[in-house]
Image (cartoon, rainbow, N blue to C red; front, side, top):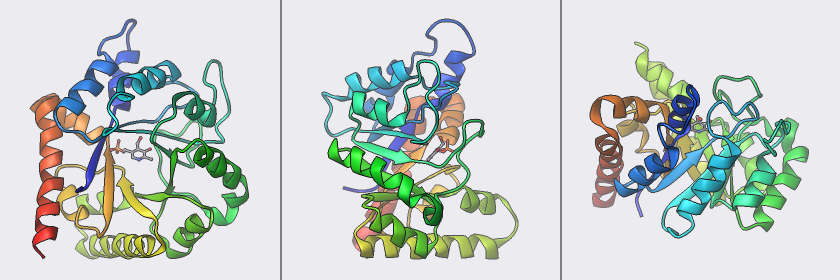
Amino acid sequence: MGIALSVNLNKIALIRNSREGNYPDLIEHARACVNHGANGITVHPRPDQRHVRPGDVLQLAELLKPLPEIEFNVEGNPFAAQRGDYPGLTSLAEATLPDQCTLVPDTDHQLTSDHGFDLTQTADKLLPVIEKLKSLKIRVSLFMDPIPEQIELAKQLGADRIELYTGPYAAAWNSSDPKTLENLYQQHRQAALLASELGLGVNAGHDLNLDNLPRFSTIPGLKEVSIGHALIVDAITLGLAEAVKAYKAILEATTRIQKTR
Ligand code: PXP
């Protein structure tokens, strides 16, 4: 299997939530992504419910249950407080049994995730969460910066995968500083090699887009990219089907090149 594309649907929910009613319909869009080649669906419920809500997670789980080849990835901060009918990430995972939970150290009012875990500070708190999720047979991925010591700690904690936080790489892509970009690429490359050596799977995400993905996707051992913002923006001009296909085409091209080496 090549590199999986998991489409993050938060932005569809954000547009829906800006009005009363159910338009656009999140479930229809999830179905369309899958029909057009996405390998997975990601959602990131937050306590403020500004985009995906707990009810959406339940409905998506129902949609994807009969499709074992499509991965359902629920991400978020397991320590974010319960609020209103938001039950907390672990309870939501228990109720919906996604294939994967990606644990992210974002705070309640953060616009979006912007750093990986510092496991020197959070290991003790994370350990029971990881054990709980694994006891439910949910694969656990930790959102991480490409720092070797941190990745070793992720392994010691029993994570199955890491998701490399690609925000700085994507920002460097847009800057006119090729040296920083190359350094960041190499950091991610080394981090991915180390993770694979340790037996951790490697996912990646944040601010990946049609321009910066071709290079990033050559990171060795990459199993999955999770992409939301840029893909949904591309869907405005290309249409959702063509947007999903364009991202898939990049990942397939990388896999083809790697196989011929
Ligand atoms: N991975 C994580 C952990 C995220 O929080 C997000 C944003 O919700 C993404 C990946 C996807 O980032 P983007 O929307 O920039 O593609």
